[in-house]
Length: 368
Image (cartoon, rainbow, N blue to C red; front, side):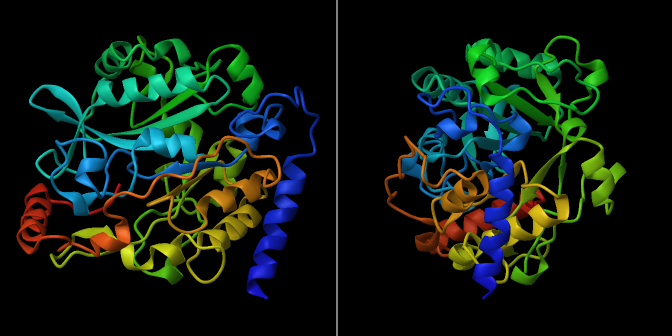
């Protein structure tokens, strides 16, 4: 019964979202012709939490040495090919260079920001009808100038979208077809980045000017909530967050204690439940509850290990495109999935110990 109620809400939300005319039924925008005429704010994008940080060191880069620190099983481009459209990553200063590091570059270093962006650029070149969103956690307060250099080094700025205002939330977002036609199909949020001091790269958007999030630090399946949590100006005030025009981002990933006080890691043992269709703590239930709370589908659903469970199907359901999807490629299983990693000890007791030590030294107190 609970599953039926969940899907009744999802179906009604999806039906309301698709009651707009299509512009071109021969082109699939973000994997479906039905999405071309929809506003960027009127679709749900599946997000890969900590996109470049993988469980399997050999699945992306030899520089990744602590496999258990990962949040995904396959590379960012494989995520995009499967239907993920929001990629998040943490940016850190590593000896003067901007790297993608999981909490600390001594823990997990996935390489330079520019190299990752270059891979995304190559994917976008090969997929000209897809709009991609990037969310960068600005862990070491990179300036707009710093980040702009990385984007230019990757030659990806030609795809960047710049809104009419960078200091207030938008009342109206362009349609996916408009973004595609104008070759502005890369939307980039940075958390944080002061928009008033960003004069060199207006395409780098301060996240919380345009987006609000629910709580992200959850360690119990029964504790997921749709209540607005960030930015602080709307904390606990969901109606205010919605009326502000900010896009709702729903964090839906579960943490567990790593064995050191204050240190949390992805809860892989419950991943199929967390990313499941129905039941307490499931992504399907969260999508239903938050759609009701917000009066519309969330703009983003952010998950760990997107390829385990029902995340793709749930987002397709929210968008009402189950019967019209094209081009979503199921990722090839990696040598070590999140469930095989089995927590902080993983494949090697020695490696697991070093991983915990690295976490402790890095002072990891939360999963971002």
